[in-house]
Image 1 (cartoon, rainbow, N blue to C red):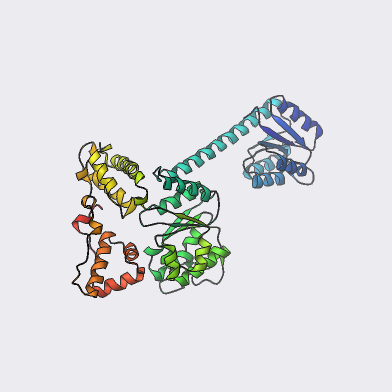
Image 2: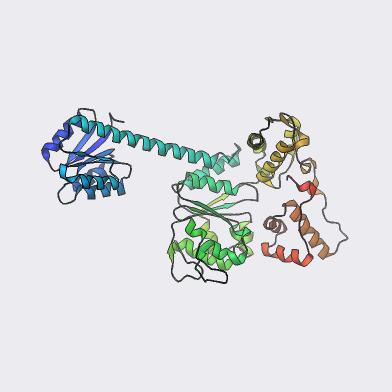
Length: 460
C-alpha cells in the first residue's frame, strides 16, 4: 500500500506544507497539500484518500472539526494531527475523537515517515479484516443452501439480488423447505449483516400475546404487565426482522404491522407515542398466497407491501437432483457430531432416498439422515438404517380413511392423521387440512384429541 497510498496534507503554513510534500513524495506517496479544512473536504470528495495529515490550528474551521468530519463521512481514512508543544491536551482529545495519533512540532522526517507507515499499516489490516468478515458472512449464509439443481441456482441468484437491496422480501414455500435458512443468507450478505437478525414465528405465539411480542408494551398496559417490554421490532433496529408464518397473524394485527412497515415507526401496547425503527423485513409463509388472500388470512394491502421481492422455495420433490448431495451434507454434519466413522451412503440407501417423495422436505431428509447416523453401524449408511416410512412405496395413494365412518368420525380421524404426519405441528397440520390454525385447536378440544408421538414417529 505504501508506494501507492494517497496522503492529504492540511496546513496553513506554506513552508510546512512544502516540507511534508517533499518528504512524503520522496517515499513514493501520492501527496496533495491544501491550506485549510474547506479545501481539504473538497479534495476528499474529489478523490479517494488513505491518510489525512492535518494541523490542529487551522483558520476558520479547526483541525478538530475537520477530524470530526472525516470520521463521520470517511471512517476508513486514518488521520494524524500535527500540534505545537503547548497543545498536547488538544492532541490527546483528537485521539479520543478518532485520530490515529499525533506528532508534535518540531519533528524530523524519520518521525513523520514512521508514524505515517504505522497508520497506513493499520488501515491495511482493518480493510483486510473487513474483507474477511464479509467473506465469512457470505459463507455463513450460503453454506447451508446445498444443491446444484436449476431451482437452487435460481434461488442463489435471487438471494444475491435481495441481499444487495433493502427491500422487503416474501418467502413462500412448504414447511421444511428451508425458508429460515434463506432469510439467514439474505441477512448475512446484506449491508445490515452487522446488525441483529431477530426471528419470530407468528404461528408459535398465542394470538393474545402476539401484539406485545412484536411491538412491546408499557408497564401496566394489561394485567400482568409489571414492567416495560421491548418488542421484536425494536430489538431488530439497525438489522433484519424475520417473521415466519406471517399469514397466521390476525388481520387486525396485520394492519398495525403494515403501519409500522410503511411509516418505519411503531407504538408499544399501552404506549402514547411512536418509536422510530430502522428495520428490514423478511416474511415467510407456507400458505398458498392466492388462497390466503381469497380467504382473508392475508390482507391485500400487506401482501403488496411485503411482495417487493418474492422468493418461492420449491419442495424437495421438485429438485430431486439435490437429494444425494443434501444427504451427504447431513451425513458429514451428524457423523462429526456423533464421532461416527460413517462416511458414505450405500447404493441401496441412495435408491431409497431418491424413490421417496419427501412430504416433509429438507427437514424430513435431515431428520432421516440424523437418525441413520445415530442408529447405524459401520462406515456406510445402509438402507435398513433409514426410517421405516421411507421404505413404504405408494403409502400416499392408499386410502387413509375407511368409507363407513360418519362425517364427525372422518374429521376426527383426518385431524389425528395430519398431526401424525406433521409430528404434532398444529400449524402444519392445519395447512394440510386447509383450515386456520385456530380452527384446529377448537376441533382438537371438541373431539378430545391429544396428540402423542407413536413409536414409528420417533426419529422422523
